[in-house]
Length: 420
Image (cartoon, rainbow, N blue to C red; front, side, top):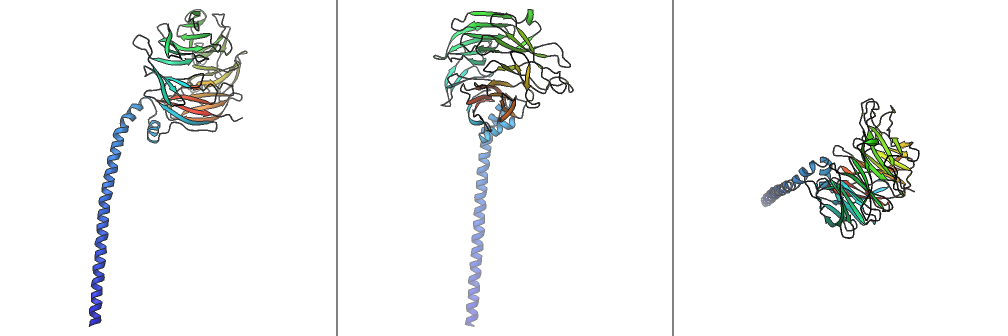
């Protein structure tokens, strides 16, 4: 009986212990569930807070960049990819779309502005900070200066839009203003000897002497030899005062009514010494597009031209938007592989040593916003990097070891390494 009583007592104690453990387990689970609910609610509050914070940025970027790429940049902080030769370094954020960038000859500054900005920002590249904000002193309803360029010696910065304003880099104050025709300035470029600046408008090409800013030559682009032509690009041949103009006429080749052309204009002449038909051959071999951009090689022997792909009919369409001509003879040296660029014309520049041609392409309707490093000897791409937003302009550091692009609301910078 005693043994039975002790056994029953042990069973009741074990049962109470089991019930106590079950109760504790249930209590632990209940408290854990409460904690989980609290954590879940806290996470939801954080998610809603992030949504409220990011929504305005997301909506604001919608009109100026690819939505998915911009969202990726906002969430992950990614601005650009790295390749074999081009390595992503950093991005300088802006408040509006960056449509013009120009690296100063001393390598210290990048000048920036855009079609939505009423200011020019001078970025100190090493400090990653804005060193100066310039408000253009141009009267009228449209004071924005959308195309920037530096003189080769770095003394002057030119802003080109409705008017042309020249700023002194030692004070960042305007030293001269050119009033252009009602169509405004398309581009202003400096000669390599720091003696001239050429200003292209839609009806007149004018060259001025630097320092005195007096007109050296004015060329009528509406009448005479220029009648029926449209001019969209301009560059000096290095070491000379000879200009290369790019544009098109309406010769009517095949189904494409715009025939791209280059015109070589010597310093002493008001009419071109040579006209080069800039035809972009594809499988049909007779498709031409207007020259929308150009770059002259540092030795002055070659000129690279860019146009929009996709022009013409389905059977007779531009597929090669970048090609290179020999300037002395006017012959076509070669073209980039078909399909390398799509849509908008590329912006191009040679590296100072002439080793590479860098070209960017990718407007707001593109999914891929790419910069191509092209071997200038073989005319084949050797590297490709991408940004997270549309690309609008390109500039290279004077030593050729870095380049930057205007990409969405940022200046994106890559270092550039030679494979030799």
